[in-house]
Length: 448
Image 1 (cartoon, rainbow, N blue to C red):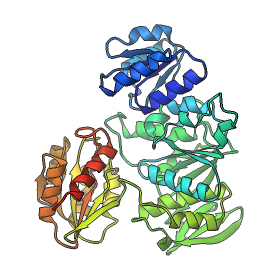
Image 2: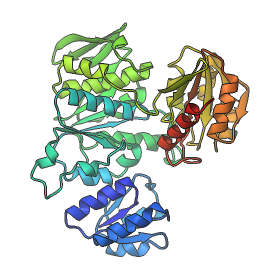
Image 3: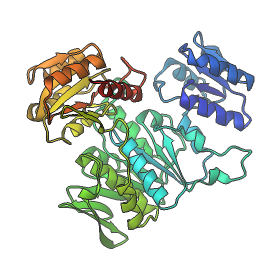
Image 4: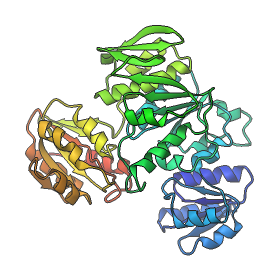
C-alpha cells in the first residue's frame, strides 16, 4: 500500500494501514525539516519512506494509493497510477471502509467547521459519544478503532466529519447516513479547473446514499437545489425564505420545524449568540441533524446557549482605544468575507488579501461602498484586488500582517471595527489560516 503525503491525513492513513497489517510505502514530494523525525519513527515501524526525487518506481509495487487532499486530482503521479489500474482513494474513503457507526458528513463552500462543531455540541449535550473531525482537526482514520481495542468504534455513537471538495474527489464507497450541503459559491478555482467541476465534487457527498439516508440541504441556495435533484436520500430542508414540507424554516424571528407531519416552534433567532444570518443558517443545519438523531428540543437549545466563540471565525480579539478587532482568518473566499461584512453595523476597516484562489473580488464592491471606511490589502492577490476595487475606495497596501494592522489602526476611530477577513488563502505568507489568525491576534494583543 502507498500513501502520498506526509501531513496529518497521510500519517493517519499510514497508522491505520499498519494497524491492519499492511506493508506501507509513504511518499512525499517536498523536503521539510519536520519530516526527518517522522521518517525515523516510521522506518522503525517498517515503513518505506520516499521523499522527493523520482516517485514513479513506487507504483510498480503498489496495490492501492491513498492520497492526501492537498494533492491535486490531476497530479501526474495519480494519473500514472490510474493508467496502471491502481485504485486511487483519499483518507476519508480509507476510513469509511472500516467504520461501523453512522457518519454525518458536512460540506459547503462556507460554514462547514462552524456547523460541524455545533452538531458535535448538540449531540454531546444529548449524551452521545461523538467523534468530530475530518477536514476539521482530526483525520477520519483516527476514528477507526485499533485492533487491540475490544470496544467497537471506541464506543462512538456518531462520526461527525467536515468534508471538502478535495476529499470528495477521491471517494468510492464513502456513504454518510446524514449528508449536509450548506451552500455552494465560487471557490478553489486555483485547484478546480471550472466552477462546474467544483460543484460536481460537492455533489459527490450524495453519490452513495440510499432512500434510508438523509440529506440536510439549504433550499435557499439554487445551486444546492440543483445538485440534489437526482439524489436518492430523503430531504430535510432549511430555509429563511419559504416554508418547507420536512425541515426548518424562519417566520419572522421565530424558527419553526416540521417533522413527521408535526409542526413546532423551536427557538427565537436571538437565542443564537453568533453574529450574522449565515451563522443562523449554520445553526439551523446543525439543529436539523440533532433532530434527525433524536435529540430533544431542550438539549438542542442548551447546546446553542453554551457554544463558545470559534477561533478564526468572526472571533473577537480585543477592544483597544474603542476599536474592536475581529479575527476572521477562516474567511478564505469572497463569499465568506461578504457574510462577515454583513455581520457589522459599525464602520469597518477591512484587511483583505493573501494567496489568490481565483475569486471575483468585484462582488465585494457594494458592501465595501456601503460599510467600509478603510481598506488595507496584503499578499499575492494585491494587484488583482486593486484592479477589482480600486475605483470604489482608497486602498492602502501593506508588506506584512503587522504592517496591515498598523495601517488599519491609523484609519480607524473609536467605535469602529477592524475586520481581518482575507477572502484569500493563506499559503503565500503562512502555513495555513490557523497560523495566519494566530499572527493577527498576536499583533493586535501587542498594540500599545
